[in-house]
Image 1 (cartoon, rainbow, N blue to C red):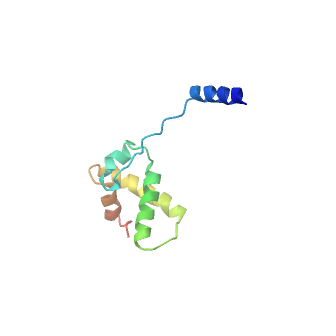
Image 2: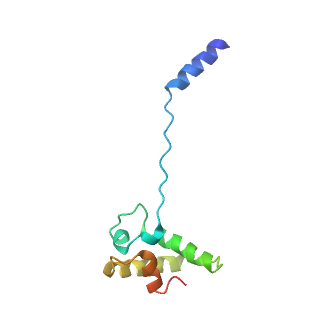
Image 3: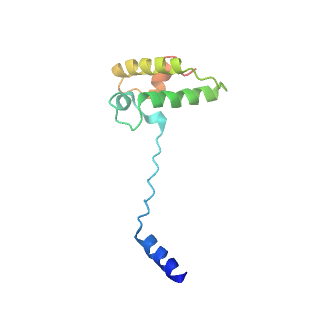
Length: 100
């Protein structure tokens, strides 16, 4: 019994325990169209639109999600951001009338 525990303990000493990955936090207000358009973020424009949709729908207590509207809004945002690189994504959404 003791031998088995010693063997198990010895084996566990050599097992590599993965180090926890650092959490990344992003202030969405600071994301620019240029960063989004040039894919300098670890998220796609679709994921950003999904987050923004939840943010704005949450403000209005609206729990309905329309996948076709998300795709349409992603395309609109990409088109808008192409010509407005210095604009923040949140301002772009407001300027396009999507953040209602």
